[in-house]
Image (cartoon, rainbow, N blue to C red):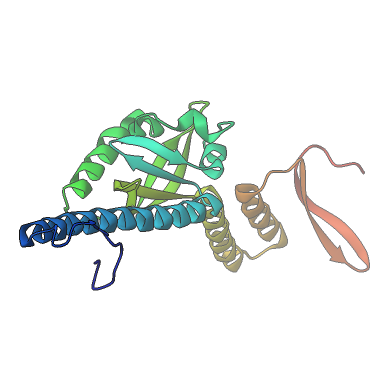
Length: 231
């Protein structure tokens, strides 16, 4: 029995009457208990495999860059992470030490955090870090860490959010704030135009940038930057 439910039956028969003694019966009961324990272990393994399969499918379907780290190596990563770091496929960065994912100046800090977390020390599960790309450049990400069981053993699952776009938004907000401050202090059209072009130049690329003033049903150029405009 497993948990009060019959899992299997041992059927023992003999033609001769009273062929089995009480000792034989006790022996069979012990064998049944051993068999039940083994069946329970197999059932638990099957349940674990099933849950890991479901979890693996969830991981594989996510669009966010992620890695699974076990024994200080990358044992799984997805297409999104390979793309983020400039690789053609996840296989290029699977099976390597996880510290190879970081620039040299970050490796000691990241390795120390990983070891402290493995020892059970309380540590932030979300922090900023840099990832090393295939071409040697880096990309800043926000990393989210959680402990999981992978193939029956403890592992670390790490999600990465590319902060490049967030930094761009931050720069835009700062540029807007500076622009509003400058034009509030400006007392002529030229100063307002220059402040506006300054703000645009901080956050956007361009070939020609102009500030035009509509006045008396006509448009007048106040200032411009970049290539010489066609007149």
